[in-house]
Length: 309
Image 1 (cartoon, rainbow, N blue to C red):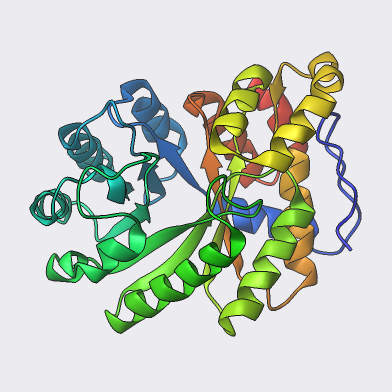
Image 2 (image 1 turned 90 degrees about the vertical axis):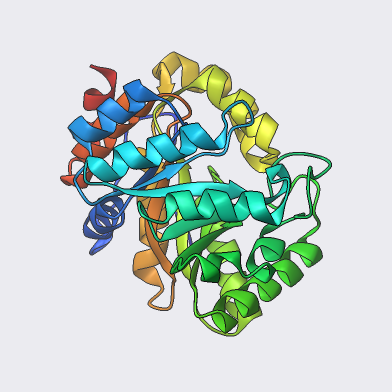
């Protein structure tokens, strides 16, 4: 059973054998997201994140492909692995997809495929499966693709459709000899994450690498806005129930206890496919990376002070 969680107070680490070590291992593999053109965030990444780390470049409507490419170029030049989001619904044509991927390929061989948040696609692609069907990823010599996962469900897609879409994307990627993995939406509930990961294993009848999205160090009000926008229902309810208590004890959300609870689950289940964390900094790249640097060194309790100083 997943132990109870206290996200508002200080870090609660049990004496479970191997859990702190597991947390450290998962955190050392952690990736982070950055917004295209966020030069302050890129400076923090260069200063605080280990060379060779994987950095995702979010797809944001107000930014064009040029900013995505220039951000990927800077990350690659600084010794990181850029992983751009490719938003299917924001692409106007197959040619636009091809031009973007050809520009990115000298910088990376990996992308994260997402549907995008537009109600109506601007071109022929509705979701990640359409991008895989196009064959352009293979034509441009990409090797590895991530796809999105939703531990709390999707705000407009029912669970049955999500399961069918996962099956289709797995089949398409594997038939094209593309390595595929799942990056989850952020979530505050370790038990929901554990149940979701188990259901994926049961549904596909095999294994797939899973990266768990967690919020970085974030102001509580901002975190509630992002959770509401993303449709993370259970997470929104958790924040609203605990907002007053959390605000009395901290000026920002800190992921320490959530990391320990997820690590406890991974440690307890040898079949678990969770391999690393995916850090959503929500604009607070510097604070989140200072927290991550301390936590990667095994000092989750010290990480609280590192993030606040």
